[in-house]
Structure formats: structure tokens, C-alpha cells
Length: 260
Image 1 (cartoon, rainbow, N blue to C red):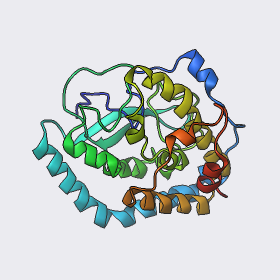
Image 2: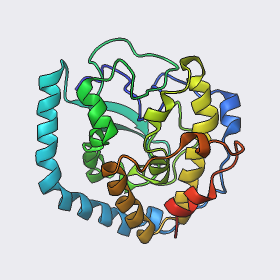
Image 3: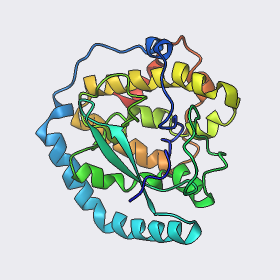
Image 4: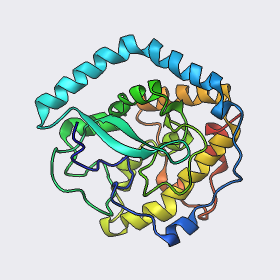
């Protein structure tokens, strides 16, 4: 399968973008501790059982989505991209294609929901997070977990992950609709704004998750993910979320998303 484009993460930078030394210095990381659950065999078993239980419902839905993508635009239904996994090991993440097939990768650009290169069906898939469903295959392969830090393109990964990346997680929920909200930021400021203001918050939430995660917190995050997907009004206010000092993370977010 040809990965013809560097299709960005929801609200994330394109694969060609880079984080500068100045941007890396802006990231505030909590002490490098990892909870016992985060890297346990029990978590792996939990992931596999959950995926297998979901397959009877998810598999037919994926077939319908794949057919709709192929019928609605030229190109493959699936998209693959290299992401940084546990310990910095690269793996190919699988998603439904949401952008126009072909064209040259753009550097230093952030994806927002009004991006002209996102297809009509792609906007729907991205808004409802349905483009993430093929990542259940990554979970079965042991490259990802159901809950964890989102895997980033290598250029955005500031430090090796100490656990499997996840389909959903604290940072994913906190910035669930950032593509919509980032559309209000001027294009010429978007890359630096994302790297200096949004990415540090995500990094801190990921570190908080890895340090505090338990089976109960994973179940809570999965439940909140389902609620957030089907209740579009449950979104983060980006202006308030980023109004604190660069090193801070709103306590309400950490408390809700990363509870023990």
C-alpha cells in the first residue's frame, strides 16, 4: 500500500514539520516514572480481549467505510504512516484515508478541519474519529494499546515513549476537537503556536498518564472517549486550555483524565 501523502494527525503537524530546539525547550516534562499497569502483561491482555470483543461490530463498519472511501475519491481506503512507538521504535500506523490522494507533502503545516485537501467524507470520519478504527489492527499486533499517549511522527517525538502508544488517552480527550478550534488561528502562526502552546500540554498529559495509569483509569478514559465521540458538544475550550503559563496544565484536565 502506497503512503502517498504525509497525512497529519488530528490537529497535528504534517510528517515533514520539525520541532526546533527552541520548541523542545518549551516542553515541560514531569519525572520519568511509569506506573506498574502501564507496562504490565495484564494491560496487554485487556487490550486484546477488548479488540476481539469489538470486532463483530467494528469489522462490518470498517468494510462500509472502506467502500465509501473508494467510491467517493481516487486512491486507497487505508493510509499508512511511520510513527514512533515504545522506546522510539518506528511502526506503521493504519488509518482510513481522509485526504485527497496524490500531491506533494507539505512542510510546516497544521491540519485543521477546514483544510481544502481533506475530502468531504474525510471531514466526517475525522470529526467522529472513525478514521482511527483501523488502528485496532495495530493493537492486535502489539504496536499500540487501547489507551496511552498518541504516537507522533518521529519529527514531533521529543522523547522515547516508555509504554505502548494508544488509540485514545488523556491528551486525545483534552484536545478532542482541536482541528475545529485551530481553524481560527492564522496560518502563518499555526505551526509555532502548535509547537509552543499545544504540544507542551499534550506532552505533560501523556507523562501524567504514564505515571499514574491504572486499570480503572483506562476504563474511565475509554468510557469518556465513547461519550466524547457521540456528544460533539463535549469539547475542550482551546482558548481557556492554553491561557495558563507555558509550563502549566489545568488541574481540572489532569484530575478528570488521569485519575488513579
